[in-house]
Length: 142
Image 1: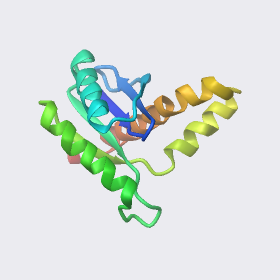
Image 2: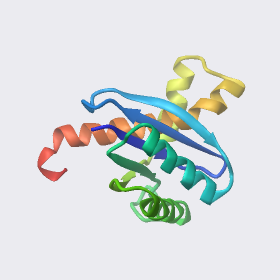
Image 3: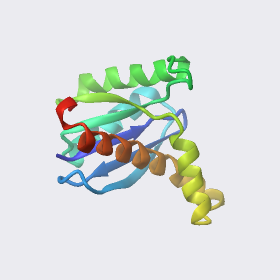
Image 4: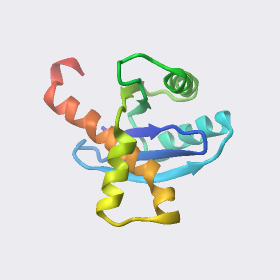
């Protein structure tokens, strides 16, 4: 099944999608929009465009596991998206993904404007890779 991952942000929202075998996760782009409802609609459009069977929304919990204001906003985002799509929408712990994405971009010497334009899509890819690994390692829980 194709799964779409979302790294929701105030200015930029990264998207990633996997192939039908759930083996390869790839960044597919960044939505540059600050209007909450507009971003939700654009993600719903991407779900249809990529024929995704599920959506994973990054859930930025605090390091102690509690849900702060940012996590609550992502919950709201997932709830709004559920109203627009006919596929399951799940929250997935994304602690540390942006830091990992920045590390990857440092390794590839991606700097400046190009870095700013791709970091959110790379973070969405890391979120998706984490979820796919969980599905492979815990098939009884999926």
